[in-house]
Length: 209
Image 1 (cartoon, rainbow, N blue to C red):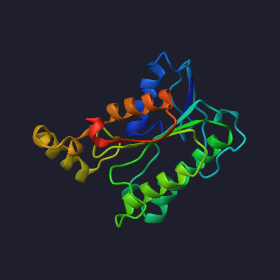
Image 2 (cartoon, rainbow, N blue to C red):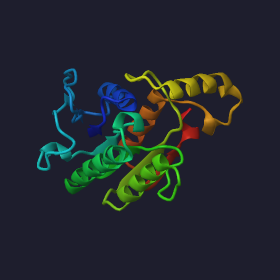
Image 3 (cartoon, one colour):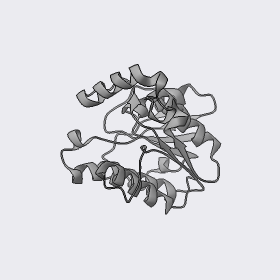
C-alpha cells in the first residue's frame, strides 16, 4: 500500500508517520512537507510550498491519503490565514489526490465540526468536511477528536491547563469528553486508510480514548 500523508510534522501527523513507517501493511509513505524529514527506506518526503503545490507530481497518486494538516488562530494570526491552512490547503491536497485517482481520504477533523456552527473553528472544520464530501473519493473518513493529548513543539497555555484538568477528571467524565491521545488518533486514521471502506464514515472522539 502507498500512503500519502499531509501534515507529517504536526502532533498527530508525526504519530501517523512513525506508525505508518513501522506498519508492514504499508509499503511506501509520501509525506510532502515544508521542511526536510529524516530519511527512511519507505519514505519519500518532497519539500513543497502549500501556496503553490506541484500539480503534476506523480506522487499524488496513492492508495490513500491521510490529512493531518492544521494550525491555530494564534499561529495563523487571523481568521483568513487560519481558513487558508485549515480549509484551503487541505482541500487543495484532496483535489489533487482525487484527480490522480486516489480512492481513499482520511481527515483529522474536530469534534463539533459543522458548517452551520456559530463557532468559527467548528464552522471551518465543517465546511471542509462538506467540501471533501463533494469530491470523488470512494472512501471518506472524518476523525473527530476532542482535546488532543501529546507533546507539541509550540506552547499552548490554555490547552495545557485544559489537558491537566481533563487528566484529573478523566475517570469520571463521559468518554466523549476525555483526552484523545495523538497516537490513538493516528492509529484510527491508519486503520481507516488501510480498510478503505466505501462511503463516508465518522470516527467520534469517544472512539479515540
